[in-house]
Length: 164
Image 1 (tube, rainbow, N blue to C red):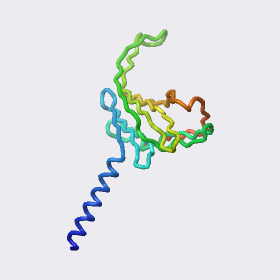
Image 2: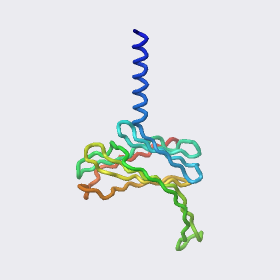
Image 3: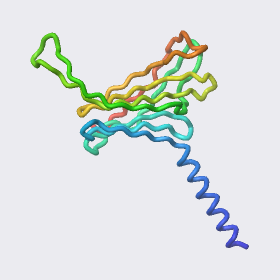
């Protein structure tokens, strides 16, 4: 009887661990030469974070993404992933003046559409561009019904540097 109870508890524990692992979402994208690695993660509690490695060394530790809006009054800090898209861009453009006659614009882009879990249903895109020598990202609020105007009270974006 004790043996069966032990195995039942063990199976329950493994099932719970699998559910927690499945609830955590991780997305990866790398620069064209693979030297810069970006990871975007949604925790089981809905916290959105990103982290960055350069040549397998941490540059940014997990850093949060989010906003606090005053109009409408909502904390945009708990998310689920609504949609993901990625693309690669490799183009050359000519500056009007400068030291070089052409500039190569080569990056991989990851667009993560997040949906607010606080009840507002607000959608927000985070667009990451991973270059061979760095990272850039921006926020974008796509057109959506019942969300035409807003006022940002606080930005919750973090940049937790891994080193000095």
